[in-house]
Image (cartoon, rainbow, N blue to C red; front, top):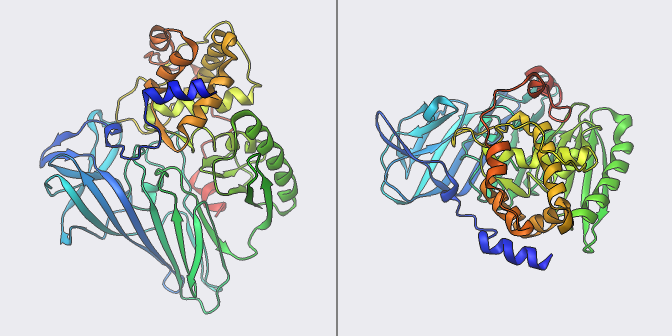
Length: 447
């Protein structure tokens, strides 16, 4: 273990959150040069007005740019206003090179240095108001197999390469009596009547944070403690869509928690939250919205995906392959399976390739076969997690560390099996049992 950690540390400095070097290349637009920025702090004030049935977010984001240009950010709702350093600016939605995704850019050329971006927008997606009782339910659901389905659906954010502290002040207006509960994987404190502050860890990305709020008693909830192998008592919350299922979720979570700690080391989060929704799940850092079938899959992602974090869409296959490899009992194979373009797409791609489940799993099974004299791939993954938890990784970083661990030269193997521009076969298009594509109606029903 110690030798792996030492060797890995020579390749990549863990916990370095100035991640602008992981951003894709800047590019020209009609108005000038569009540049990626390093967001260093974000503060979001969200007002849920039950009387007017409106949700308004005011965001102040400090950022740093190393090159002169127009700053890139993302937000799907049209902004009510945008200011930079206290001055109103225009913005527009643009396509990334090759048309693989879309972002927004503030149309003001900035000198390199520190700046402040202030944006006001309304949130309409996944918010529900009950007119008679003025109840409020809202969730910031995310998905990773489709483009632009992280927190850009709700608030102004950066792309997935960026890590920075994020604070959310949440207020509920239009209600005389407070009966609200907030489930979030940050530090939650009540700051006043119908007011809360959520402080998310500095290492979180746009796909790591979890937020779900509803009236007290809306879901059957169980609060309990998970005992970590490092001696900590981890506070845990399980709440379920179907009231009778909360007990079996708790029992399964306890079992899988013990398994994962034995395999990869102590739970790296301050808490655990699971919403048993009845639908296939989605992972967050130490939290998940999930079906019972997908619970263990999503808990694995609190190690790989939302603790060792993908820096871009071309790295997203790694954690899905690891979770799927576990789902199938960590099988070992003497062949690498069918080649797939898991990581050779555009550098601007932001979603995970859905070939990661089957093709990725088969490829890891072959790596396990190649590395059996070193203890196998699980031995590598344990050390990899311990070294790079809270850090961003790329496919190249993963490959380089595998080479250090195994002593093998893997360039050609990755070119043939991971960066292969292979047209999808029918089985590649099959929906994942763990991350099914939910309709908007289904997502709304889970709030």
